[in-house]
Image (cartoon, rainbow, N blue to C red; front, top):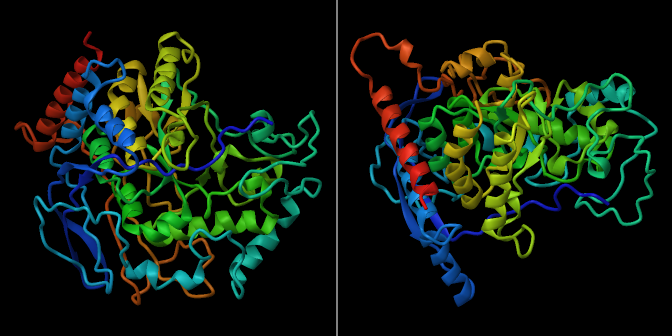
Length: 504
């Protein structure tokens, strides 16, 4: 049976770029705001494990390119430098034992505790209103609002489609008709539902020669260098966040909204959706959406099924919850390299997948309609690949935009005070998002609601302006701004990186 991808990867740690987490965060009267920022930096740290052959392979990954002549490593080094041009986007964590904010600058601090656990009181104080971390979600006992919402959508769920297979994707013994009556993506990559009233999945973007750019499985605790890079490129993306990850790393999720990325749901526990019961599927989406709201202040209106595993029953549940189903056209399979991936997968294979997409674009495959690529904010490897190929993709495609922007979805969230640009605005340089967000303390009666109410004084509100780098036309003086100088430097570095990457 066709299976788009067989598991969730946890990338192999080899040569690890360690970002510095630097920001001065201070408490206001009834909110904690990200008012002061430091400059991010990074260093290269050797992480050795495994056999001597593994360690030798580590050296090869850093010192040689895919063609064996060392050009890619130079290019990547330049891109790493580009990623760390001073940018006001690095974050400090709270104390692991209290919600006291560490409001001090730490220039040059070597942050090898970036992925350590921490406590963020506005989220940690509400965990009893959510499923256990990485547990299969179900409606919590006493959650009357979730119970009522689920009851309201039950009449919209097909009764002739049942759960199939296991949560890990084992379909042994599943007897499914060749006619694919349920539009089961995993079986046939079907994206046009057969059940009445369901919209087609979003699988590509309407604009020609345009790449719908996004990343699954975040937020990843070590993403600061990568997000610095995206900010330096004035690049926004669609981030498909797992609820359990948001619960563990809420400040990383906050950063995505602050940087102006589009946030979508990627379920609570990242399991095969068609194996979940109706109630479990509802709960996986419901509590992930609630956790994103609690951590970031926004309520997503889009989702992506893990592994692409979706059928008309699952689509009906998501549609009834006002969640648009987004899949993809092209898969880099970047997840498959390293532990948790597929045995024997090499970096060269992942590079070949990226290069195949680039070749298709150059061959005119997307002259009529753009494409959506599947990549991951999953490990240092997947993010390093994204950094390495960003300048090549940007020079090959006419535009790289978040999926919602490609569809002119100017209001990406339930909250009406938050907007993102139209496609026309974005491609002319206006990538700024506008609005404010707030994270809200939940009571038992509101823990599963839409979460659009005002913040309670009992928990701190995180309010942040979600502004990306301002377009040059927004400058109020004739002087060259710091942002403009930075943009010029980044462009030069990216150009140099591309040159090194293609030199014979």
